[in-house]
Length: 112
Length: 406
Image (cartoon, rainbow over the protein chains, first blue to last red):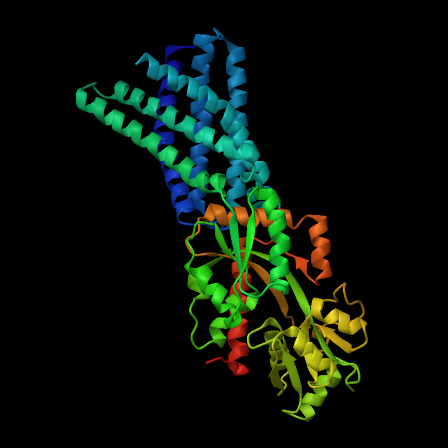
C-alpha cells in the first residue's frame, strides 16, 4: 500500500475515533438520562420512532464504527499475525460491511 | 505508554468481536410487530446483560487509551496536557461504569429479602386469592418469599395509604382491585392517599367479567326486558352490591348509567350477603363476580341475563354479553400490582416481566379460571393507559350517579 493510502487510513482512523468518542459520550449520557429518568423501553422507542435526528446520530455512530474497527484490526493483523496482502484487505472489507449492515439494521428498527 | 497502547489494542479486539454480535442480536430483537415485547425479553436475558456490561467496560477502557493516544499525537506533550488527558480518560471510565451500574444494578440485586404484597381487603376474597396464587409462583421464580399482608378497611383505603407510605425500594408492592386506584378518588370526599401521585403501574395480573343476575322467579328473562321495565317505572328497580365503591357496586352503577336507568342501590356487607338478598328476592338484580355468582346460577337460585364482557365468557356458555343490548357496554374487573412512586424502573420492569412469566404456568391458569379470572400480565405502560381510561370512566359514572362517601 502506498504512502498516500496509508495516510488516508491514518486520518480515517483518527477522525472516526474522535467521532466515536463524542458518540459514545452522548449515547451513555442518553442512556443514563433514560434509565435514571424512569423512561421505559416503550417510551424510549416512542421517542426514537420517526426521529430523523436520532437516525442521523446513530447512523453516523455505526458508520464511524464500521470505519474505525477494520483499520484497527488491520494494524493488529499486520503487526501481531504478520498477515498482510490482498486477503487481509478483503476480509476486513467484508467485516466492515457486516458491521455496517448489522448496525444499520438495528438503527433502522429503532427508527421505524 | 506501551501499556496504554497494549490495553487500547486488546480492548479494541474484544470490542470488534462483541459489537457486530450485539448489533445483530439487537436488530433481530427489534424486528416484527411485537418489537417492544421482543426487545424487553431480549434485554432481560442474563447473557445480554453480561454483554452490555462487557461492552461498556471495554468501551471505557478503549476510550481512555484512545483519548490519551490522540492527545499525544495531536498536541505537544506537556504536564498540563497529561493531567487533562488523565481527567478526560478517568471521566469517560466513570461515565461508562455509572451507566453500567445504573441500568443493571437494581434489577440484578433485587430481591435480596422477602417481598410484601399489601392486599387492601380481608383474606378469602378474589383480590386476596389472586395475590396468593401469584405470590406462590413469584416465590419460586425469585427464590424469595412473597408475603401477603391483608390491610382491609375504608374501601381499600387503609391498605392503600400504608402502601403509599412504604419505602419505594421494591420490597413493598400494592395489590389492589381496580376500583381502589381508579374510582375511590371520585367517591370519597377525603382520601388519605392519591392513586395517581402515590403509585406507578406495574402490571394487571388478572381480569374478569361480572354477570348480571335476577332472582330465579323474576319476570325478567332478558336484559332488554329488565331495561324496558326500568324505563317504564323509573326509580322502582333496586340492585344490591357488596359495599360502596366495590367492584360489584361500580359494575352495577355503570350498567345503570349506560342503560339510562333510574334504579336504587342497596348496599350489603360484602358480595355474599348481597347475592343472598338477591336470591331471596329483596332486590331486582345484582351484578356480581363470576366466582361468587356461578354457584347460585348453576343451582337454579339466580338467572343469568348477561355478562359484562364484550364476548361470551367460557365459564357461562350461552349467557350473552350485555353489550348485545346496551351497545358498547363493557365492565371488566381487575386485580393488579402498583408500586409506591419512586420505585426503580428496573425493578418495576422485572416484576412485570416475572409476573407475565408466572401467569404462563398451566396450573396457575386453571386455578384462576376456576375463580372466573383470566390472566393478563401486561406492561406498565399498558396498565397505565388502561387505568387512565378507567379513571375517566368512573369520574363520569360517579358524578352522574351521585355516588359519594362523606
